[in-house]
Amino acid sequence: MSRETETRACPALLIGAAASGQGKTTVTAALARAARRRGRRVAVFKAGPDYLDPQILAAAAGSAVEPLDLWMAGADYCGQRLFEAAGEADLILVEGTMGLHDGQPSSADFAAEFGLPVALVLDCRGMAQTAAAVAAGLQHAREELAVAGLVANGVGSARHADLIAEALPADLTLLACLARDEAVALPHRHLGLVQAQEQGASLEAALDAAAERIERTSLPDAPLPVAFTRKPAAVPGPWLAGHRIGVARDAAFSFAYAANERLLESMGTELRYFSPLDDTALPDVDALWLPGGYPELHAADLAANTAMHAALQAFHRSGRPMLAECGGMLYLQDSLTELDGPTHRMVGLIPGAGRMRAKGGCQGMQTAPLPEGEIRGHAHHRSATDDGAVPIAHGRRPRHPAPGEAIVRDRGLTATYLHLFFASNPAATAALLGGAARSSTAGAQTATTAVS
Image (cartoon, rainbow, N blue to C red; front, side, top):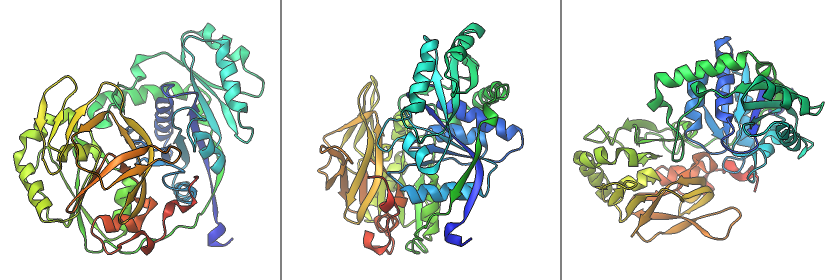
C-alpha cells in the first residue's frame, strides 16, 4: 500500500444529540474517563469550534482535545488528524455540536464524511414513548448515517426506562439509560461550561461518577473499528523561523486552540507565555497574540495591573505585530463594563467601550479578509463594543450577506471579535504575525477542500 493510500483502523464513535443541552459533553467525557480507567488510550475531538467543552474532555481523557470543523479546517485537515489519532489511540471519540443535523456543515455531515457511527443522546425528561419517536427520526433522517443506538439521559425511574425501551423500533439499540443525577452535572455560565481549571477536584469527582454509571451500560462496547485514510497535507514553510511570539495565557485568556499553537511552532516560532493578570512585564518577543477568554470575570484585576498596560502600550508604539481576538480585543480597548456592574479602565490601545450583555451577542463562522490573506474563523461572544475604531474590513459570513465582525488595525495591531483558525491559511497567519510569508499565495490554504 502506498503512503498516499495508507489506512488505519480504530474503534470510533461520534456522540450526537437532538439539540444542545442534551448531555453530549457529559456522555463523551464519561466514555473517555471510563476507557482511561480501563487503561485504554483515548483521542477525543470536538466537531465544530469550541474552547470550553474541549477543556472538560481533556480532563476526562488525560490528553489534549482539539476541535475539528469541516468549514474552518477542511475535510483533508480533519481526516489527517483522525488518521494520526488512529495510529496512537485505542479509541477515538468525537463530540458533535448542537443538534445532529444543525448547521452547514453539521455533525451528521462530519459523521458521514468519515464513516463514524453515531450514538444519539436524548434528554428524556418530560417524555417517554416520544423519546423513541424522536430518536427514530434522527436515525432515519439520513440513511447513510450509521447509528449505533440511543443514550437515554435524564431517566427518572426504572419504569420510565422500560417505556422508552418498549417503544424503540427493532433496528435502534438502547445503549444506556442514565438517571438524573446532580453529581455528574457540569456547571454552566454565559458562553457555555465553566472552565475546567476553575472546577478543580469537583470536576474530577463528577467525571469519575459519570464513568462509573457509563461502565454499567453497553455504551463502552458500542464503538466499532473505523478505517481512516491518510490525507494529503500541505507543509507550511519556515516562515516564522527564529521568531518569538508572546501568548497571553491565564484565567482571563485561555481560548487558544492547541492546533494554532502547534502550527506556529511548526513554522519555526518559539512561543513565550505571559499573564496579563499577574505579570508586570512582557517577554522578549517579536510579536504578541492575545486570544479570547473571560476578561469580564477578571476586569478589576486586569485594570489594576497598570504595569502591564504600560508594557503593552510601549510594545504597540514600537509597531511590532499584535493580534487580539475577542476577549483580547476587549482588554486592549478603552474600557470594559461588567454586566450590571462597574466600568473598568483597560489598556487603551484602540478606541472602544466594551460592555457585557445579558442576552444577544454573536456566534457563527466567518472569514476574515485581511490584507495578508483570508483566514477562516468564528465568533462567539456575549458583549458589544460602543464607539469603536473605524474597521479596515468586516468578517464575511458563509451564507448571509450581512457584514460580520469588525476588523480593526492600528500600527501593528490587528483586533477583532473573530477567533481565527490559523491552519486555514498558514502563510497569511505568518505574515500577520510578522513572519516571512507576505501573502496567502506564499503557501497553500488548508481549507481549500472545506465544505462550502
